[in-house]
Length: 286
Image (cartoon, rainbow, N blue to C red; front, top):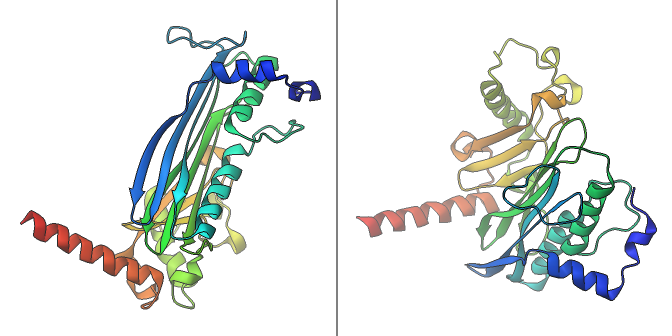
């Protein structure tokens, strides 16, 4: 396992390591009052610490990261909140044996590849983490963190986290978007979609089939994102069922929950502006 000696890097070693990394690629995006650069960083190594070639893919480890770096936002609080979240998500490690938390992507890659070289695994390793901007609006932003890989265990892993923030950097909850007492009807609508997705008849008990929900009844989580089409909810592996059941990705269209949306709330204003934009685009194309 990793020992403290790994962190006593000399300047020469650090320079050598950085020079061996693939230079991060950057793409700039501007959406309204929000500007961010898309950073893409990737690196591969074999057990000897050498870069893997296209022909040599056996016994290799690959790390692939992409994420936004926010440079302009409606206010400094939102910009700092978004960049802080991206930094925290990006540098969270799958290794419980690390003595020191990595401070940047280069250190994360170094520690990951070091762990691969010191492991007894005869399989390829892979770690991908993509943080995406899903939806932007003058009053909110929605993000998605997709992390997946294989680190030599019994099976791989995948974790999706969804986030929504208003333009003050405050997290948006379902209660901020929907009318008081929304939960019962929203869960009933979502359960119908869930059963359809998994081809489960209405008369079948979910617990009897291996699913696990609070109090034995279907219930949405707070892992959701605001999208153009509707509210998207994601259940990760192990969250409501064994690993073999996989994940569940539900999209509840706005027309199915229109009566639940606060008429003077953020979501209603977003719908109005989105419809107005669609009408403008339609008139331009006519």
